[in-house]
Amino acid sequence: MLIRGALVLSGDFTFKKLDVTIQNGYITSVCQPDNDPVTEVNLREEIVDAKDQILVPGLIDVHIHGYQGISCTETNPSRFEKLRRALSRKGTTAFAPTIASTSDQKAFASIRYLSQTEAHREDGISRVLGIHMEGPFLNPVKKGAMNRSCLQMPSTGKLLEFLSYGPGFIKLMTIAPELPGALDVIRLGKELGISMSMGHTDAKREEAVLGIEAGVSRATHLFNAMRGLHHREGGVISAALLDPSIRCELIGDLVHVKPEIVRLIYQMKGREGITLITDACELSGLTQDMLPPYLPYRISDAAYLKNGTLCGSVICLLDAVRNLIGLGIKAEDAFYMATINPARDLGVQDQFGSIEPGKRADLLLLDSDFSLMQCFVGGKAAF
Image: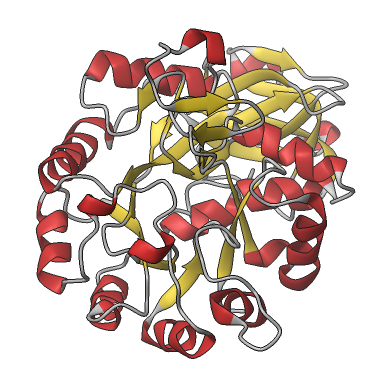
């Protein structure tokens, strides 16, 4: 396939008029149109005329719990395929299903299913790149919408038990670093190649710093479900903002984090220090009238429990990108935070996250307003 004449967000994350060639699911060349080594004659494959369109890397959501009524803990293949297809139609070409604190048995089943059944699919719709365990080693004081009864004290043995159901497939773990035993779990997780993230935490600044020294490299949904920023106690937020080694998740719905705070985070961390996420729950893509009245949720600008507690966003990742662009953040930077940074969080930046030869052909064609026109996963049109 040859995608011709698009304004391409190239490997250095600048926009350029380029041609992109795809073969066998991989990008094989990215070059100036007049230097294209592949012609219509020798390509013998589809040519996409992308004049007046924008080509960007496929978006990667590393913090998502579900979409259109389907949970990321779903273990029915047909329903999980429906979830993946729905995400593709919204421009999310890859994701890390996020397992919130739940019963051990349900977590084990989800880890086993995702690692054994979904890990290596190449079917032209959104792909699973790893698992994000959001818990169970979280502080009950900052549980948010989590089920308190499913929270546990940190244990290296329990971490190893989770991993036994999906060796090497847990890529991210959210943990409260102040809990007894947390630093040992953080050290082990880092040693095993897991990106350890501090979240759902009441850590003071000193406790957060100890977590960072032990191996924490991220902050989960910054400002949400964590000790607040105070001028006499900076807490985990000050530790995350001031340490250049920490990449901060940012929920991009402008509800969980208001616009002025989004700008503050961006000014302090820059594009290198932010991973844009949705933290979408399975209510995303639904409306209130689609819910049975007995369910304890309210859908408006986000998803809420009946008591008013936020329990997730109702956006897709492309919405989040557009929201940031609408705040005056450069488009190049907004896409950077939703593509290469999440790929780095998952340790797959050599294959995903940018438009460069040798990388997977997960790509989006957008119009001038950054609305989705076409989605490719592994070089195949997703819809």
